[in-house]
Length: 280
Image (tube, rainbow, N blue to C red; front, side, top):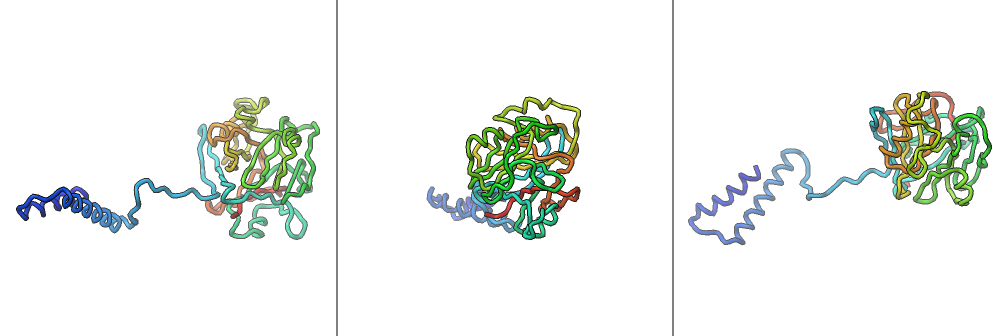
């Protein structure tokens, strides 16, 4: 269609039996291009858009991803344009206990949420927990059984428009002034290396969720597997698939996601601390 409009402009000049000047030819060509763009916009129902114009990514959102043949959902937050918050107790002083209760309390502003670390039978965090700048539970540096104590374990924290995932000892030595922080374990990726005690593909298969931070510190990425995966596959997702040189395991088996844009609100066992994205 564009080619025909330009050719027709030339024929109009020829029919007048005079040689068009270069300036007139350029004006007529531009006019033809404008008409062609307008026609295309009308035909396809889209406004004409300048070349190179891109749609900005949302400040926070979730999308399905596939890595090494396994399916996951990854939720990314740009902390310069959205906030990551931790939630434990509601206004009544009791643990939220579920994603649905948190969603009801937060309303439409809650972009997504998931469980945010390991907890005891009373739904209290078993390690460090900081909410709105207040340390509600101290760091747990003891040895013991289970994934939490598979050292090095680590801390995910938020401070202003930046986030981090660091080993617990490093967090404590650095005296980080965090607005929000949760301790869990094990670390999945440490400075680009898989945790030394995580095998390439071990025998343990579980639904898992975790969090990583990209190199600029402004982007936090939360991920949950759609089915049972190994620790190794989950760690490689963060390092190789999501560009997170540091990542932390949050939990397995109880892993749950609330993502209204995906029409998803998981139900399961009672949950302890939760993490979610809200508008800034």
